[in-house]
Image 1 (cartoon, one colour):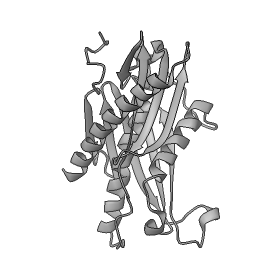
Image 2: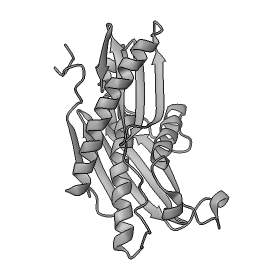
Image 3: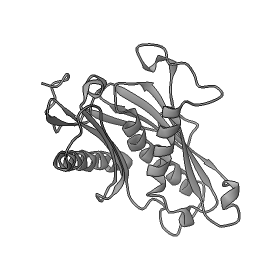
Image 4: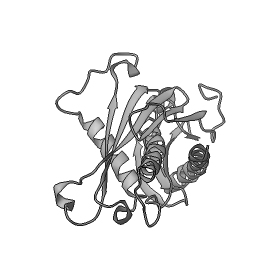
Length: 237
């Protein structure tokens, strides 16, 4: 029995609240069970120096856990982010860049900020899934400001989910209690049409077989298909 009573292949309850704040062109409060992440997307009318003059855009991301997001206070990272934070924000950026057409975007940078308000496992996967909606809304805002794209710059959706093995059982979308005890922990990032962007998998104890990896990938693909459907429903609302 899972801590929250879900079936092994069942996602936590997901809520996507768009336009959560007024200032950012894209602003989404993303809830996955007890994990809550505020994802915002803003537009900078310039690009990093290595892209200047090339007619191409860029997407970059930052991630942080607020002090009250965990049961012990998470100190603010004022001057230098820790290794985990740096790794996660690079993952979020890579995931989003996989589905943005930079030629269509033009010389603009989309800045994505993912701030964890409450953490109960899966903060990186929630950040990716919520951030895609924020980026979508920021691009629609640009259109509302008079920018005319030849085609909409998002090629596809992108979402992410965790999987794991506990006591020999493959489970989808681990909460913190499960993640802390998992024999295997895996994060999967995929596009809406089922292509893999990134797989992060680690045996916390005993190594796992290729067959178990295939089980987790199948479970993750099922979960991401559902998350992509939720994203599509959200942006059509």
